[in-house]
Figure (cartoon, rainbow, N blue to C red):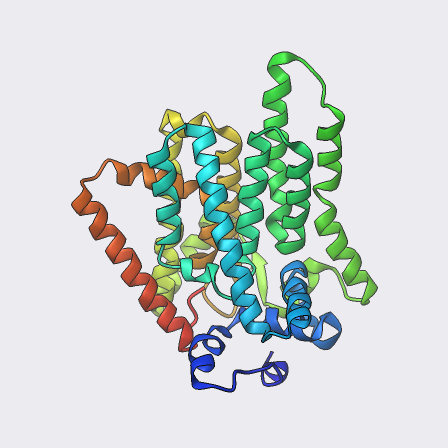
Length: 350
């Protein structure tokens, strides 16, 4: 990382260093390395980062002659804005409740780690195409849904998991009517996994070993049973307490309790594809472990992908008084400011 970190274009002004270069931290460095130099210009370890976001940023930077980091920030911010629009539309389609839709996007936008949705990371782009694909599934537009799932698979590894709600929606649609898939739905199922396939082809083209092998070797990462991994995190916390590990544990437990509460509510339980997708993402987050660091590393950021949980959180907040709502939003925003400041100071947050 560091060899190319110092080769990345930096801002020449104090203002640029304060508002642009300050975002160039942790995984953002890897993504901007790929954006600036391509896979051929970085180490093997960086190839575990999926290509769509950094290559998109790299192309836009070359076309506009704008600093690659600034393009990364702008790309993420636009994708973040689209995520909020798609989430609002999705909640309206599912629940026909404007207040719930409004508070859902407020909960996502004000979540303490939501600043990552403006950083040069893949999370905002992945979130926008994830919510967009689900929205298209709900609106019965399978070709667009399949294309977006394909794009998600080129953005992050878990993009392929969006095929789960797609298949479940198709089963729901055709089981009752005892009909078969139409040609558009068949094509959507064919193109959905192509994103991950294209990424695998790119790796083969550069003569790089398989994604999981490279990921486990260079990231010192493995997988455990989720609840066993949480126990490891608790043990680590007891032995050497840290703010990071406390916040990560709070994140995964908070979202687990939130999903359990949603399962108990009929208005959410009936949306089985979304509930199962959310649970699958949570299980993936809690099963990944990093052997040299926190067992739940990056959980603070990854929980942003469980977008349906923010609808449940919004439903909870709607039952509170306006004073309590304002207090929670203030505390959440304050936490966001503190965590983003820590990120700027090279303190790992997620």
